[in-house]
Length: 181
Image (cartoon, rainbow, N blue to C red; front, top):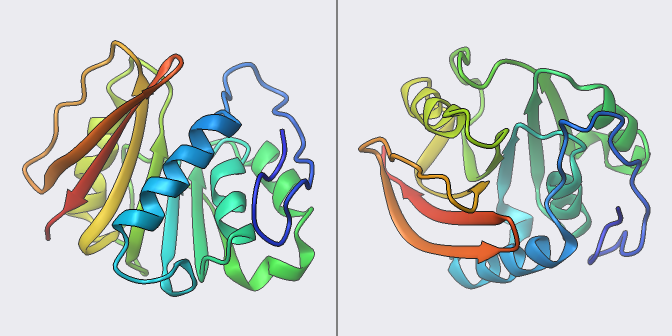
């Protein structure tokens, strides 16, 4: 596993110790960032990104390499995440790791412009987390949301979210959504 673009291009990340963690493939990450660039009204340097079910942190750390303003990463098990974050000591002011349950979030202290979520497949966690994010004020109005699920998995959307696009990358299906507060 490695960073594929930006100032840390080629930097190796530590592979997850747990088989439960399934990082988004390099190919899918590159495609998602290309779509993100085309849909955002501002540059990444003005964006606060939230990565829920962050796992190894590969997606958020890729965003840091590409120049995102700040990232927040949420996971119940932060061991793998913290190991990879430690590989970026010069970026510590840009990165916040939160050990939280995405299905039962506290009230937000920061609102995010972009959401990336890759929950464990086929457990209904994506819908629960989307509801929590809306109820607890984690997203800015018109936030751009990227939600990865298993290819055959459905994603019932809470009313605050509108589907913009959908793509399939191998075993993953990625929904691109717009959040309206």
